[in-house]
Length: 209
Image 1 (tube, rainbow, N blue to C red):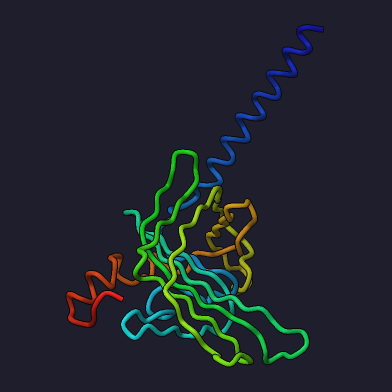
Image 2 (image 1 turned 30 degrees about the vertical axis):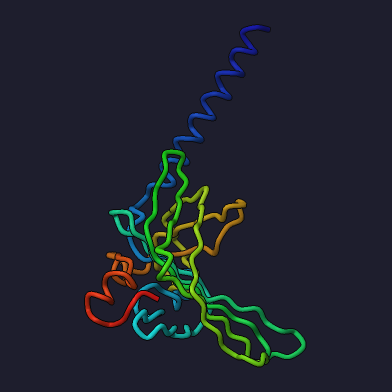
């Protein structure tokens, strides 16, 4: 009886170790460095999405999210999300978000994103409101408690037979974000400095916003 119990414990322990090993391998199929984009990859980071000098967004063809990471601790984030109106189709609501800053990869596997507070922007679009478009400063700390990567043999919107690295991030509450695929390596990013205190001022393009 005792030998049977001990045997069961050893089996469970070996399975747990195998699970941890598999998860570790699963999470390290490639570097985090690069630009990752969801869906049809129309949403990306960099100047294609947001111009910090004119403080204007370029509206992508489809909604989605994009994250870029460097190897030395910088990130950039772009999001285009909208909510449809089932009563009046033209009265949808949409938001475009852009921010960048530094990230930390912690020993427990989590990632924290700390934006440069003066740089981020969000634009809200509401065609049926009195003010159809509004733009505001935006800065939101983000915790990604878990994430993993894998080689996707059937990536969403890509041609048949294409393979791509995929990145799955989770929100702070554990819910999955839209799956993203590697779009650019090296990443497509704006300068990894606090733009409105250094880069733009150095070029004489403006003052701190």
